[in-house]
Image 1: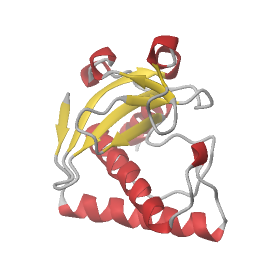
Image 2: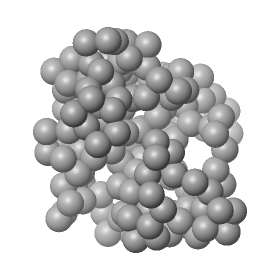
Image 3: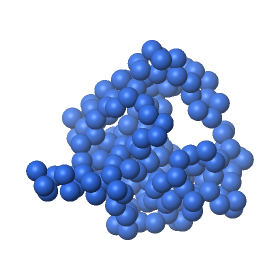
Image 4: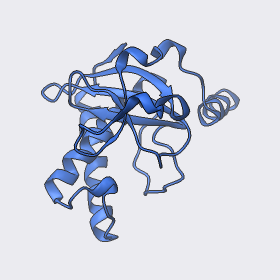
Length: 170
């Protein structure tokens, strides 16, 4: 596990991006996935949770984290998908229609916004029948933290490799 302490500037950035996403969703009448009810404050809190996790992954990778308009084909950070939770014992959640890729579990302390990157898995490995959990509010695959690979074994995505290549050639 990797512990990431976000600076006040990084927390502010994540909050600003969460706000931008919430405003964009309202303007374009975007609907929540997985049957969530539309509630502006809840939507902002969900967006903030995701943005804090993504900000932590960007910091871990040493890359900038900026707002981009929604694109269902795009990945969260440098070709990685980030799943964030405020639950201390959270698991990596995946749904059958999630895109193929590498998923990173970010566990956020809701008081300090310190983030623990608990590990990662691929979608293919995460959507095993034994991980299906109907006890959750929205049934999905829930990969236990003990089944995640450690962050120091995180493979580079093509997006991340391209970014590093661009930096070194500039």
